[in-house]
Amino acid sequence: MTSPLPSTGAGSGASLSLDGVTKIYSARGARTLAVENVSLAIEPGEFIVLLGRSGCGKSTLLKMLGGLLSPTHGDIRVAGRGLYDAGGRADHAALGSLGFVFQDANLLAWRSVWRNIALPLEVLGVDKPQRRARAAALAREVGLDGFLDALPRALSGGMRQRVAIARALAANPGVLLMDEPFGALDAMTRDDMNLLLQEIWLQERKTIVLVTHSISEAAFLADRIVVMSPRPGRIQRVIEVDFPRPRARTLVDDVRFQALTAELRDELGER
Ligand SMILES: Nc1ncnc2c1ncn2[C@@H]1O[C@H](COP(=O)(O)OP(=O)(O)O)[C@@H](O)[C@H]1O
Ligand SMILES: [Mg+2]
Image (cartoon, rainbow, N blue to C red):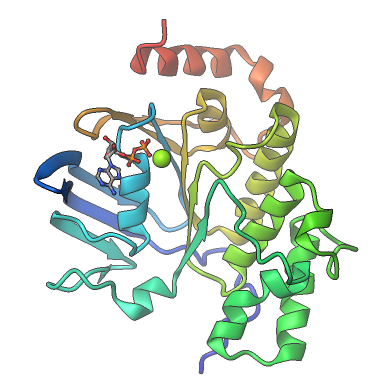
């Protein structure tokens, strides 16, 4: 096999494109138009945040991008390659270039940190010394040096999400898809994780699509914020965020940051 190791560093992100993507759920006769006619072109290495209230189709959109749910209509491409075939089955090669992080870390309780991180490599048939070396490098990158042999129950919530991020990066995907990854963490841990994620992104230049309903998280992290509106889930507005990087924690005190968050609150109808 072609080795997914090591991290390819800068420029390894893949492009994503959505063209007229619609999702209608049908369950026992009831039809829900969850996502309607979403078109968006995402550049390789771009950091996109999907922002919106609960129920506006963010998770549905992310699942479709992740090969977990085929669109009812429309087309999704990863690095120019169609993600689904005519029967709605996800393309295997495209799937290999996607990494997922959810709100819950979903770690295997009986596996140590390094063996959780290395799980995707085990699936790919990478040998143990290489798996361990890659997991150790990733653990360092996410700030878990010294915890390689710990079990998940010994970790805090933030540390578990660090493991989940490292695991999502293990097979060196071109795209990282994150669904409210820090939604269950306390505010301070969440700020730490935002800084960490920015660092990882600056180093790896993966394409990231992150879902959140936190306005400040969106403004802090994104290159572009895609504001979604509910019933049906549509793109309401796309806002470019051009604060220079790396962004420091103190950015939140900047009047331009505050102007942006005020604008986002207006978009979401929060005042
Ligand atoms: N499996 C499903 N079956 C039927 N309806 C669903 C399903 N998943 C989500 N929905 C509906 O689709 C809409 C969008 O949901 P979702 O994508 O989870 O939104 P968000 O992540 O923004 O909260 C909601 O109205 C939700 O109730
Ligand atoms: Mg959701």
